[in-house]
Image (cartoon, rainbow, N blue to C red; front, side, top):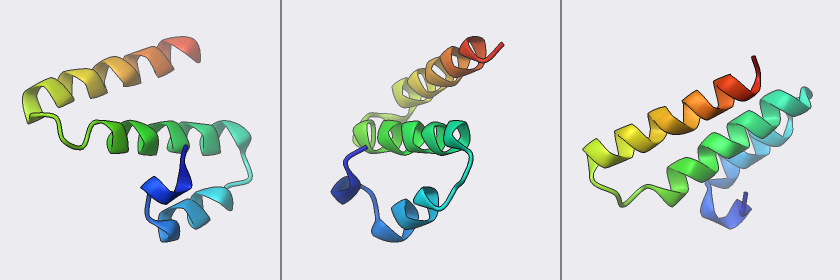
Length: 60
């Protein structure tokens, strides 16, 4: 995650998370949010669901 792309108050809090898996998950969501900020809502919603489905299936 490129820190200048996300508000520093947020990235500082994320960096304080001790659990590596939780920290990586939050960073992945923040990056996804940043990358898809300009997309129209319906497509964005589908992409978000797909990303979360991928993460859940990886952790099962």
